[in-house]
Length: 274
Length: 104
Image (cartoon, rainbow over all chains, first blue to last red; front, side):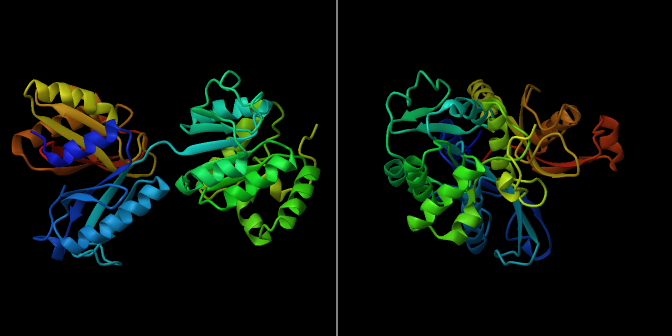
């Protein structure tokens, strides 16, 4: 019969709560006698643990790595010495991450937003649409969105920003500097892994200047802001554009956005070529 | 893992023992990523999968044997492994599967 580790894991999974299962998958040399194949540690986001890999110090290091993996939403195998030493490999630990869906926040309840919500759902995101204009930000216009919020972008970001992490994405589609600028500045204060803003080359240049005037750091903008948003796949319709944006979100997450595929921000020509 | 919980609940409610098989590593091309999970009841009922269907039969046999012995083991299926080739992992990759009794 299963015991308390499985019960803890099961209840976290059924409650859609984040949890990590660390399992010893190989034991060699000096680690034999300390730990055993399939020894386990269940780690909660607050660092609370259940179980043991067989050594207190190994548990401590594996918990640290489990929390880092949870933050990034990736499964990894880590190698350690018998007591969690780095640059050794007597123990292999498979760190299995069970994370709730990453978030996609779309500022601007515009035409392109509906398609982006749909493609975002296909990718498994929990999708929020946020726009301060109650006529546009309605659940009826975005039936697939997990939530539709009527609020100013900067206020919304102040409220939920601290929850965002490297797996989460923010897309600014308003095309209007009075919404774009606070949305981008608000997102730069978070740890969101992706930030993109839609607009023509002209809109982009004007917005860039406004952001600098508003106190944004140019190096940080260069590093984090994907603008104009999307991969250059020749997208035109809202649906194609949603694919171009989501492809860029994936490419940024996988570290392929620079050099492997070409984001629009790296080019100079017309965005819509005939 | 989540997708096999309902079946595990059902099996355990009927007093049946359960083995869990999880993909813990993939080299080269593999059909499922690490974390893919299959559960097997002691009478051979199966939930979830660890591949595109190529090694499931062999994993069920390993799961039943692990329930018998009570000892976890890592099974490797791959192109270079004659036995695994016989059960048909033809994508050219190698997959490592931890098979263990659900007694934790």
